Image 1 (cartoon, rainbow, N blue to C red):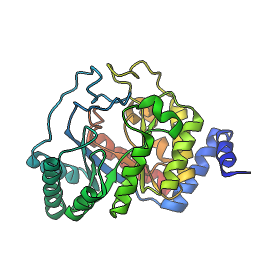
Image 2 (spheres, helix red, strand yellow):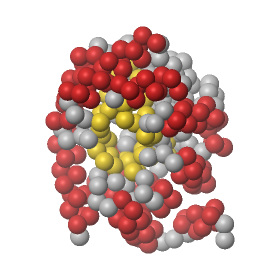
Image 3 (cartoon, rainbow, N blue to C red):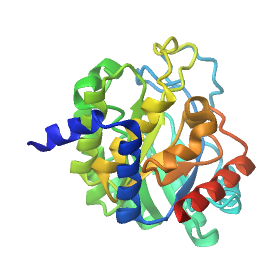
Image 4 (cartoon, rainbow, N blue to C red):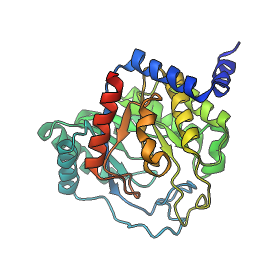
Length: 306
């Protein structure tokens, strides 16, 4: 039986058995460590790319707030708040596929200040960067670079046409060559099939990324995917379980969409292999109150001790 056939066999497993295997895989390979991070939308809107799911594309009339790169003191203050709220990582996220040299230089200074004065790990999602820029950010104190592959290689062109899947891989490779950890995942619920979800997980495993955020599509008015039907809670948890089994010891992080799809069953995702989460919101989509997520974190840790 090929590895692909073994993975497909997971789809035929009863739900409860799949969840049990995923939870065992998480416990055996990652223990009870829970990776908590917070991200900041540091530059919003006016993106030239045509990603069908994204509220920040200038091609979509979504009515979101648009602004240039935030002042460094605002980014610094957000990092302070993230640390206070219990996050171990703070991510700086900017819209657009490429930043200017001046923007990168200013962010490098900001990352250096955060690293030295706050003591929180700094991550960034700044679009397509080359090796030299990524090395400069690492020297400034950046620990991890985020760059999603979004979906499977086959389905990617149905979601994005202004850049290629290969370009995403080039940036990930450049970040790894610069000595940075890499956070890369994607979105489920965009109309892709189970084979696409499996292929996305297998690609991420082969890339050797460190953390895999699993977003569940939140259909945004004004985007081409606005009318998409939400996937079921059961299918979302099944996908998380399959990602864990394939990725074994990597962080599988639940991100956007967990509130609207998982609702009162969010803790179930962490019994199905997840061991990371974003708190404090998702760029243009509000998350839950931090106090609610801190309570959820306590519940997860209690479940893992049983």
